[in-house]
Length: 450
Image (cartoon, rainbow, N blue to C red; front, side, top):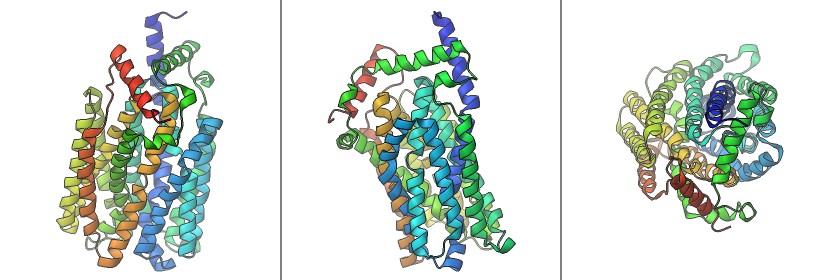
């Protein structure tokens, strides 16, 4: 039997190995995910010229992804629990890669809508599956760090997606293919290949990891099991995924995450269009300039992660991040095109930092049996912001010729979300009896209506 000191050392060593070996794999998956989500933003101008997809149709197609994502999120989550995160993550990635590749053959608006919907259905469940995977491999004290690093990968992907998109779009008419066909085809095939490789690299359970010693497997498995046992207030038989929708705290978290996603996807899909207002820009320069806000966001997320590790409560940090997003967006709405890029960089520092700060709150006390479905609900309903933002911006641009009114609306939404943060019931991260009781209460609250 391991001594306490030896067990603690083995848990720490096993966790470090997870961060070095497994987290990079998940980050590569996220990069591919974000590339395929954001590429239509760069292809918009060419799609309009070649296929006749206008601003409103583009916005609707971009948003339909999130309708499908919301519909299929919970069913995907159920299948993930049945087949395991390893198999399901690989399936998700190969599926979205195939659909993304088919985007290279879009011929009209109807086909564009159908493929965007199918892409959302294929990707549904990806983020909750990763968070659930963390819960099965990473001790609670390190889960916030793992989530922050993982989410930071989306900013890395956004930063590199612009230059990559610019280079691929510049292959216009090479081998008889349009630039947007190169963009969708290459990034779709990349996801298929990575998804197939991931199946052989990820381990389903701690005990399957050949890169851990027997002592590390035993200690890490025991640590996760002990944390699960602390949530003594939940009776697994009483869990009901659909009635969880009636829980006020979960609805509140959905609302806050909805506002965050409004900003994330308004910028993801419309930032290239805003940058094109700068005189003298080309597809290539738009791609590289689009990377600027996301690079700034990466820096901000690094410092936000350091501050959150020292803070007993994430709520003040989350509220500040949302207010920074609101201020930057508001300033961008009234600035010149060049200055708008600067202020949107400030906004990106706010709303991207808000994302990892947000996810530490539902993670802090939910029972593992509640964790996956609760995150699926929050993620799927919150992601509807990804439908509203591009659709709303598309309609606004088609009606007014400008996205400025949409920026005012984004600023208002971020400000409202900052106010809602004050009503969130957060559980502290300290260990000990008090923390255990708090975790049990939050887990109980998550299923009080079940």
